[in-house]
Each structure stands twice: as C-alpha cells, then as structure tokens.
Length: 188
Image 1 (cartoon, rainbow, N blue to C red):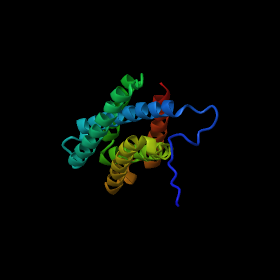
Image 2 (image 1 turned 60 degrees about the vertical axis):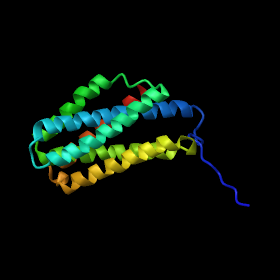
Image 3 (image 1 turned 90 degrees about the horizontal axis):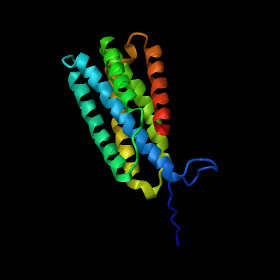
Image 4 (image 1 turned 120 degrees about the vertical axis):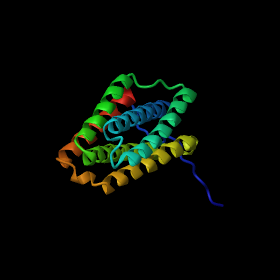
C-alpha cells in the first residue's frame, strides 16, 4: 500500500514565523496591492504611449493585470483581509513610474516591465511554494498570475527592453523599488 502525503500551507514554518492564516492574509494583501500598482503603471505608460507602436501590447498586459486585480479584490472580500494602507501611495507611484519610463521611450517602458516582473516572479514563486493542498485555489490563482507576468517579461524582452538607455540602472532601481513595495505592502 502506498502512502500519500498532503502538504499543508506553512508546514515548514519556524518558531516566531507568522501563522499560516496570517501569511495567507499577507499574500492576499500584497498581491492585491501589486496588481493595483501594475494597473497604475500600465495606465501611466498608456497615457504617454497609448498611440505608439506598443500600445496594443500594453493594453493587452493591462487587461491581464485588471483580471488579476479583480481576482485578488474578490479574495480580499471573501477572506476578510484588509487592503494595504499604502494604496494611495501605490496609486501615485505606479502611475508616475509608468508615465516616467514611457517618457523615456518604448524601450524604457519595456525595461520597467522586465524589472517589475522579475521581482514579481520570485515573489509569486515563494508564495506558491509556501501554499499546500489546503489552499489549492489560492495557489492556482497565484500560479496563473505568475504565468501571465512571465509572459509580460518575455514580451518586454522581445521588444528590446535591454536596449533602453541606462538599462542596468533603470532595471536595478525599479526591481529594488518593487521588492521594497512588496515588503511594505505585506506588513502595512
């Protein structure tokens, strides 16, 4: 007879780590904040590049972010998780980053996408690894969003993101900023 083991969310947590319920609330909060910020980035980029050669691509990626945002909004309500108190900051910062990189040109806008999506990929991967079969629906939502985000990254790379002016600096600053936003949104 073969024994099957099922993995539970947070089963490898250490003393002092937040409970699985607290971790899942953090996940939903930060993922909602991230998708909200992503929507604002694309709104900023489209405000500048809405008639440019990448407008259709930007609209497609924005539509996927909107779908992710709605999924996490539903989870906030269903799980009674409060959103981050930093939403007003992400409202302004997301649009500013999107418009600012778009003003630097198509490649800089795409470099922004690459940097954000690299940080998000790692973030979603860690969340997915944490979740067990007891949270299969949430894990599927996160994994689906992660697949879309990776597609965005590949699309941006194919659009010459790495040829943006000062790409290493731009990429590094945006990626670090995204990681900081993740850390803050999980907690506040």
